[in-house]
Length: 540
View: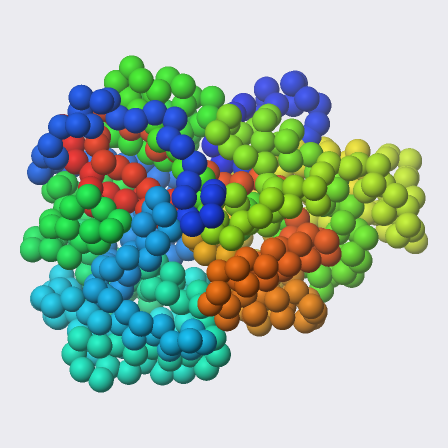
């Protein structure tokens, strides 16, 4: 599940004292930046050379683009691979990259890509149709290790290379989402020799990519260094400001887990930029030699995902009580920053085909209590409800900072629900999610396409709810096959509504990303899925 740590507005102690209670736009557009780099510098011509040091918060111990799912790892991996297409971050339009043009048949089962001439992998191997075929087949072979790409290629029937510059991708059923998927890092292109490496070697950065940077070194839990790829000349003109070699000589990603250390490192110039400054510290970087830029992450917002194979959470009334018992406005305004949004649907407001379903997420503690009363849970001596000698308690598994969930925990206690917090290391939480060993899991998944709902919730995909098939699954499958935008909008909204009405999705807050950087940094921005993009970046 894609992840990003919350930016905390208040330290935990301040939160407790303050409350005693308890993280847009169609077409892939985004939120507005809160500040731009200094005007004089921003208008200056880019300068080649130099290093940029960027702080990340956690090392997931893998930087292979086709395997990563964590945003910090993605920030590294994205820069090392080109994709068949790119996505305009302002309009959401799919634009050429390695493929200069394409055709999609009427039922979105077949995609024909025509490749540019002269593009190569970093080892000099041509990026031809046969190598694209090798890549997609390698992603399928990785299976669950290709945490995102394997879902994008679900139902893949055949990849053909009728000539060196033509790739024909055929699915067994309509897959309208695939064109956007072809723009993602998850289907980024690696040299055919990389397909023969073990998954572990690729995670260790021993792969050969096709992007504007190459992996120079990677030391787990310390840093990754990317170097500019000499001779790169196939940047996506529709998504970036130039098409030839990157400006920076190197980008160094340093692992800095502690928020206070990141703040101090940026203020002192030990690092040049980060996307993980605490909200309370952000104002000091809004000017005064620094700049900040914000963008909402599209995709599925931070959710409590109920495991409905567990008896307690199989009861829809209990799940709906959880949904009604969370005050999203309070969580956002208290724990997060002023730029963050409470959830108003399972999809973030920056996702194409999003529709506001906030009425279904209204804070309604009395309604929650009525549902629990109806389900036979009565208030016990300590305020927690009981039924047949069993306390109304369950556990949420997560790895992110716990402050948002501490607020949710206290809000739910007010309706008689005891939510226990099970904070794990990221690898442990990922393993628990993969195995289904959780009552509730907490997380999000970023993608600039509504098919992300199917990826997470459908019984034919990840089936995060561990439930049997029902009406919503047909809608999720149907939207993936819809090529008419109006029809797809209708299906996405219907599916989104059912996910909330049955509390398969219990949204909490939206994820957003804010870059804070020194004014020597220019052109560091976001691609369409709010992944960091260093290709246009330069330093003065």
